[in-house]
Length: 379
Image (cartoon, rainbow, N blue to C red; front, side, top):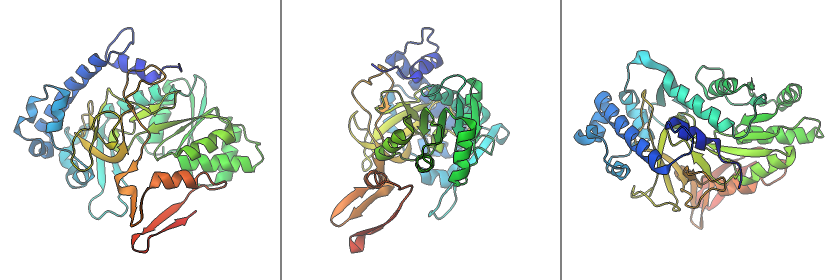
């Protein structure tokens, strides 16, 4: 058995369990209580949710299964009604995030967070990062961190509180500069997007292996193909961990443990469902569907039954680390990234697995021409 995920003890502590041994029934009771409180908060303070959820929403839930009786929210709701979903005064808002809406006509997606909302994310980052780091480590952070409250800034805050040395780096795509920084700072661990990390690893290999290699890597913000992970591990002789999350989740959703068999989820702050993308019906463990989540502890802008567009499933078998936390399988793609051609249906993830297995590849773009039954790949 591998070492148990630190999220197990962190979750137990959040529930007030002194011995930090997690009980699944107590966790689900906690989730029911928090979900009911969130629904009441939203119905009382948000013009959007007051109308969207209906009159009886303020009564809360009797069971977790009752959540299926409430309507979904989605990205279109964020664009159209985002400011109406806020449940606190503007004076309590600490950070507003505007998401890239490339290719979308209309208002951008915006999310509002209080300082406490973001402190909960820092707390989760500390638990998640302790999976792959040790006190005293020097951690290179390739993610955006200039703005207060950005993902990089929150990671810096988390690592500082853990007795580590965060090394934020303003990624510009200049691999020589990044490699020099990696070498000079003697980095123990790297946090970055899959493309950033692969590019830096392959560049270091081209330099003849003169760079000191990090012991561990955390990949985040984008889908990480197995072929890419294997290549980074081969070049640096390190261990790569994958993180699942999105800004809508408050930047943190789940992280792999040392078993590397799915994401242990942030269940004290988020309640996850897997639903049929067509019917919206909740699916049993083991069945692939769309990932849907509800926030449990967020006050600034709660999200209730938010459709992510991601495809995955709950893993029904126990994790090798022994945790009772739910595990989400690695993503099977996104609903909007399935390429439907007359002769076949392809997922972007399948293409990525094949492309990143080719030596020297750093990134690619794909264009589908269904009428010509053709894909154009730019590598």
